[in-house]
Length: 549
Image (cartoon, rainbow, N blue to C red):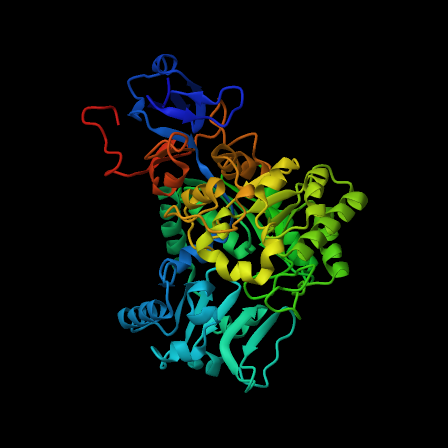
């Protein structure tokens, strides 16, 4: 008999041969059977928990295939600037946080958007000094690639007109005076971030617990951490031992050209220890090759339209990057590469092709992360090389694209977030949030963007490439099956079929039966993880009186 039965629903299985069923039986953490209500009723016993969906839509749990989960979780207790649509609103949130946290030595947080600053300029330390001067303040942009600090933070960091940055990054300066303005791009952020007190281990664990609760409420049952370290991995190990891990975690370790053999050996040991664990894996590495378009740090083939003298530079030369890819591929790791600009995307494809020619490792499933602009000539290479296109539909939200569009210009805008072109070419499309480098971690926002490419209030954004819209079904597949494929787990999860891990999400409305412009109104009302209910919205989906709940 089944441990749990979900019945009387409209269940999208993500299985081509049997895409829709009415009921699902679960036993020992896995899908036992999927079929009609009559078929599944035969598997109900005295101890079976039965949940009546009352016609609601259910689907495999979401797989957020690119997240920075610890950073996002810690950010839940910091200043939240997401949705602050003016400088005054940002300042008020900072001031309010400072008032309600008088003992915090640093005021930290993030989520500010380039588009909502006056004249779409970058912020300044004077903007923060106006609301708090006595304590250091450091705020990350919504994409995580730019930091904004007050004068006290710069004073503690010793940043002056004479300070220089080594490597990939920039201290933004006043063009007239040469004085630092309060903004740090890319790697220059470490000048201030190194001073921010490290959270205790217990604080990190508690943050992860809160992050997992949030993920459960959004139907996220798997995450692929796109940066991390063995120390961070150990936090998930502890939660797993305590039975508190309520999402399946696959981690990519952050690496650079100076990674030592001792570090690599530690990565290998963790990878081998967790190679087949359905809860926790560590088989990948992550390389950051460029920055972001909004601050002109993404590496482009041609100069930026609003700054003709700049086209951005990659973080590494082709020779250094190629060797990094080859080294980690030889060691048996999957490689993620952050590449936003079309030049960086081409470099990544070149390096992957070169590694395949020399290492000849079968099916390495190389990944490129973000791919906000890609040259038309490079699109067919994804399918030919088997490279996964790992993209974030929330980054194509029209709320955030005004500064982006001005930087790339009208011609490259037609190649923005080329989901449809990549799919037509045969590429595997993988979707995620990039949390906390995003305006929302909610997969529903991404599902809304994918078939619409319009704002949530229904107003189309002129010229925002409607040709790159994709169907809801393809978007759901990118958030489920192809995410599992991206971590070599398509054989055990992200489909509702016998033998698959029992991760299921239930929605407040039928995504397939509503006006696509109403997708953003949908909420997750129940999440089943590993065969048990870990979240239920009691208001939208109350338990039925007298039922076997």
